Each structure stands twice: as C-alpha cells, then as structure tokens.
Amino acid sequence: MPILALVRHGQSLWNHENRFTGFVDVPLTEQGRGEARKAAEALKGLKFDVAYTSALSRAQETLALLLETLGQRPPVIRDAALNERHYGDLQGLNKADAAKEFGEKQVHIWRRSFDVPPPNGESLEMTAKRVLPFYDRAIAGDLRQGKNVLVVAHGNSNRSLVMRLDKLSGEAVVALELATGVPVVYDVTTEGQVVSKRGATP
Image: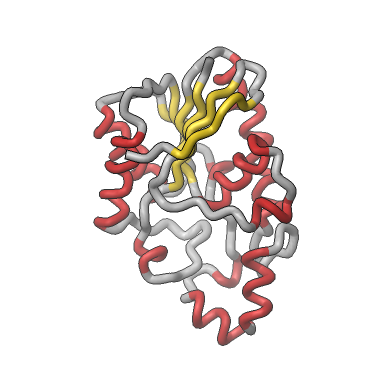
C-alpha cells in the first residue's frame, strides 16, 4: 500500500519575523534547518520513490536536508503549482503592521476565509485550484503505480492537499494548522483512498 507524506517547510526567515511571505523567496532559519532534520527523524524507516516540492527555495532546502538526513536520493520534481498561496499586497508586511494598515478584521478575513483573496493575491480556494489538478495529474499517478511519495511544500498548498485527502469543507480547512517541519503520513490505496493517517513524530 503506497504512502503519501506531507511536510510543510521548516521555519523561514519571514516566518520568524511574522511577515506574509507568499511567493517571495526567503531562506530557512537555523531553527528551520533543524526542523527539516527533525522531520527526517520522524520519517525514518520509510523509503520514498519520488519527492515533490515547490519552486521556492525554503521548501527545496527543507527537502534537501530531509533527504540527506534520511540518506535517500529519489527523483525530485519541482513545480510552481505547489507554491505557497500568493498574498498579493500583503507580501513582505509584518502581520501586526498589516492589521494596523488594513484593519484587524479585514486582515483576518483575508487570512481565514476560503474564498476572499487579499488585494492582488490568492484566496485558499484559488490556491487549491492550482494545487489539486497537479495532485491529480502527477502525485496521484505515482500513488496509482504503488510509489511512496514525499511532498515538501507550504502551509496553504499542503492545506489544499489535506482538504482533498480528509474530505474537508472550505470552512473546515481554513481552521487547519500545519506546523513547520511536522510530517503528516497517509496510507492510501492505489486508487487514492485514505486508509489511515498519522502525524509522524520523532
């Protein structure tokens, strides 16, 4: 039975600074690099046939450290379809400063509603509309072949995948918190049906 493991990248510099990151390419912090290695420890004993990540360096670096720690070298596929949600005009802003500029209530709506995008950005619904077709045509295809798949991406792109796998509503998925560097592992059938799910912890 194939395995699908999802990991949100380790803490980035802008996570640490409480800033909206989105499509901006920022590096991992030392803590983030440690989280990547800790994620590998949680996944010890699993062998991956293929790995997917986004076009952004924080996810790619997390994946590289994770695989190095595991001592595995599967093929790696990088695709912008797995990028973080685009936060538009909020990108680069400190979250507290954004609340002062746009109003706390408005920023909360942008962050925590499923279908309301920030100015010039993406809603979670829009993010899912690029993530899920990629899942269907690429990741699910590997699962159908019985391959164990590792996905190292972002909070909102992984949320989209969890929404599909756990059959969550838009309202439920926006409340979902995915911690940096903490794997979630699904046992799935080759048809993509979830048999079991576990949060892998060292």
